[in-house]
Length: 289
Ligand code: HEC
Ligand code: HEC
Image (tube, rainbow, N blue to C red; front, side, top):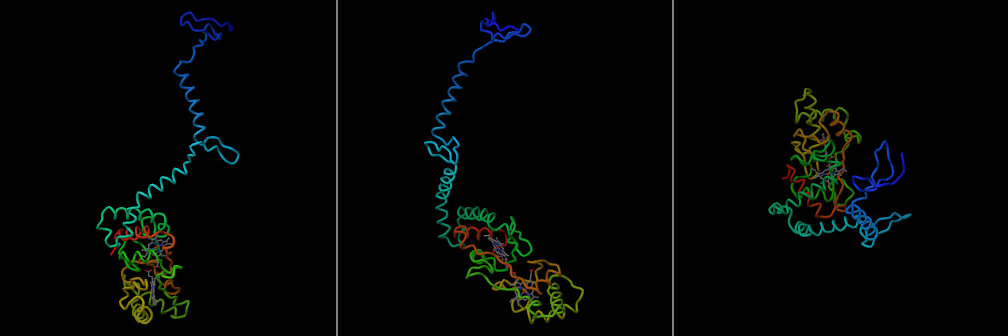
């Protein structure tokens, strides 16, 4: 290996002077266009450092003369989106809930907004498809504890059920054993009676005795025919749709120890546009009246 720089006789370019087994390395210069592109990127980057946020400092960064930030850009986009919706929002506030359906564009706007507000605020309890869970009602069916009209649903969402709001819906399922209103046997009998309303029960004597217990203790809220009472949120006990569960243990527990599940009030947390959107959305799920 020699280090003598010489001209390559075929290409006419210099060699680097490196040679291995008779193979010499050419010192071909970079093409001009490539060099200028590289200088261009260097100049561009200097300009970029000056106008855009670029260099980290100890507890800050160089903001750049344009003052751009992705957070600021997001805020601007949100404000633009809100401005674009302003017309629909104002119209939704001005339109009675029952009439929104007549304006297809407005109705779709409400359903879209309601669906996303539901995913954020309601799905933890009612499930992402609003199908509910024991103690959290299914909002897709037409079995309503408090009523399924737009106004009923709107009121429920605004003020909640047994919530801390003054205008909350109220109605309690008493604890008949804990509070000493009924004996254990009576509770078993009335449980048999309640179950007999939606399925065949073998212990007909207990069902018979339970009928009497029901008339004296339960009909005031659940109705003579056990069809429920929406004023009090007392469920229909005849329809085989169970709020807390259909097993005898669960029904026994409800009657012995009472129930009082809470649905929060939203009027202080969500704006009226969102609550209206939610009412229309829940009403649209299939069970709306
Ligand atoms: C913390 C849990 C929780 C959250 C969050 C929640 N709910 Fe509820 N919701 C309940 C419970 C529990 C009930 C049943 C209360 C009862 O026992 O009557 C209920 C009942 C309802 C009812 C009445 C159903 C009927 O049959 O009359 C509607 C409508 C409703 N919720 C809509 C909503 C909407 C819309 C949201 C979101 C803004 C929401 N809920 C958020 C727990 C919740
Ligand atoms: C003061 C009114 C009131 C009285 C009296 C009352 N209930 Fe209730 N009951 C309710 C309310 C309200 C609920 C719903 C509780 C909730 O939403 O958490 C309920 C719920 C129930 C449930 C649960 C239904 C389900 O779908 O899971 C059963 C079962 C029941 N009651 C049976 C009875 C029986 C039996 C009696 C009589 C021994 C009785 N109730 C007396 C108001 C009452």
